[in-house]
Length: 531
Image (cartoon, rainbow, N blue to C red; front, side, top):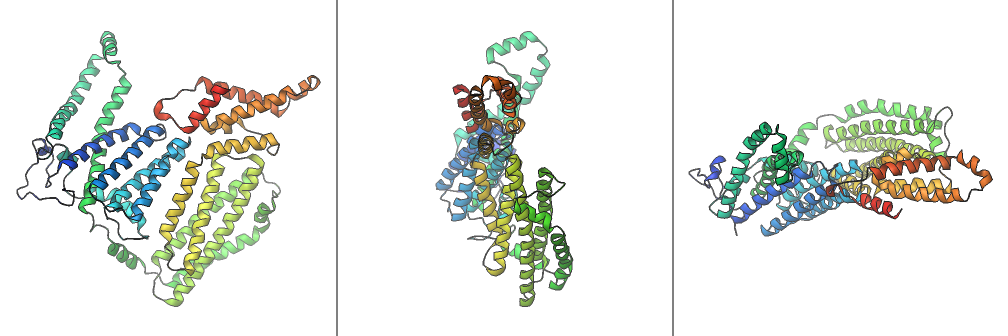
């Protein structure tokens, strides 16, 4: 069995096949390589049809599943060595991609799809032993960068040469000739059609023959055109990973050398630059102590509303955390290493910075909880809370690093972020938000529900819409006739009208194509049918 690592070099720079003259190559491909090139072209086409993920979540999920499964089969066929890192990152990308179906949130869809694609690139490179170093590596982010932006653009040969290779794949060569003719025909056919489309009779007849849809045809043409570079990227990622053609590009030695060259700042300079900032933090905490501690006591400061109180806490946290992360990163990167006393002082400094940040995080969380108690949940509040929890875990890891030197911060921070995103993405946060708000309103602990906020949750909120409407209608039936007028002025009655209006609007516009299918849409449809 020949694989990508067993390539031969043609001494006379021959062209592989009649149509391989379109792309000069120094590589001979076997049958499996040619088959994989066609698979990559098909995957490229599916990617183009699935993009963007926020509007075609199910299509995007299908693409990700096909991508991972077909690649895994090919890796087994090529006898790749699946290390723990390849398996863990590959599984994380595949599992997170299922949030494209489980969630209806467009932001989660975008990040889930993006991570699944980046994780795939790492998965291929790790399975072919192209990581910078083994084990839990501090260079994992460099590996991601190298896998996505370096490896696919190195090495010799490409998808065109493999697809049209006659030596080992005569069928592929024939298909290639047909495909090439079709590609050549696209532009002149499109031009001729455009020039003749002025005639309504022509369009009518064409529509009867082909069920003609101009937008659909244009979409297909664009997908076919962009499928070629997309498939070429996937193929070159795979081929170059087996070649190890980028093995000497960005190595551990390069990273260590760059780190050593950057470590030029004396410890005393770091303290001189940092102490004034820490002093300002101390003064700020003292001056604002009552203001911040009120969040823990569940009390709102005077002359301020809940929204301003929570929002100011969050943006203060965000700014200070960004500054502190930059400070800690700069200290790790630029401070001179080797001095034991200086190293101990730097560790103390890092702990102090982290403690200050954790104080701000805790106060911001207390403010946000106070705000949620008063106004309920929204996606922004959930995402803000999620972000603060991620920061908390990362800064705790930084503190532990100062006492346990073996801890590797970068992989830990990466793992924490991915794990927390997995929880957020597959938990169906929008549905939980809607249920939380409805439950609290029905039990009386939430003063009001803003229907426009529920509408922002999309399909996930529909079952809760209907549940709330039914419960309020039951309450309305129990209202005595002599209290009817007073009830019609109540917030419950107003909410019923708003809910019915929103549901009627939703039902009138409720239609979607198969590739937009998500679990929230299915549950919403079921709730509507049983309503």
